[in-house]
Length: 116
Ligand code: AMP
Ligand code: ZN
Image 1 (cartoon, rainbow, N blue to C red):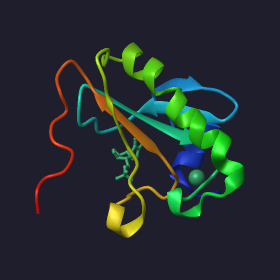
Image 2: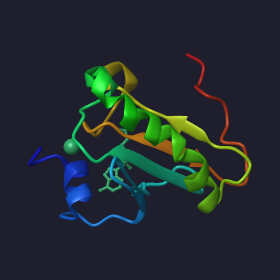
Image 3: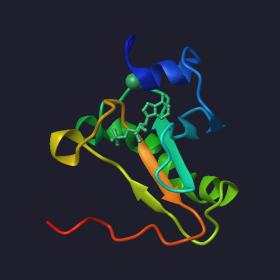
Image 4: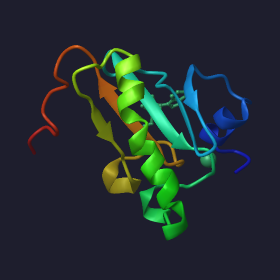
């Protein structure tokens, strides 16, 4: 995807604070961290959101989860963390390239959602 900001980050065309990459995923610090630990893990290949995944994407989805512990622990969240994936309009996804937030730090991150 030529104009996708996260595809550009994977290709190195936009700078990022990379923390990890392998053949399936790329991870970097969120530019506006909401907790002391705030990392984004994305597929190297463009997938718009969880609403567009296919069975062939299962390995990359598994890898996104499987790298969470090591990345959280290495970046200040040694006693647990939270994974968040926002999808589409209702999920209030802002960047249309699938990404998983890993948030945490020394203290609990707070309630899952604000009450309506
Ligand atoms: P979401 O609301 O789930 O789509 O989250 C998008 C996230 O991407 C936000 O937390 C932004 O701060 C983050 N973000 C947007 N642009 C960049 C960028 N160039 N580098 C790092 N994080 C970014
Ligand atoms: Zn993309």
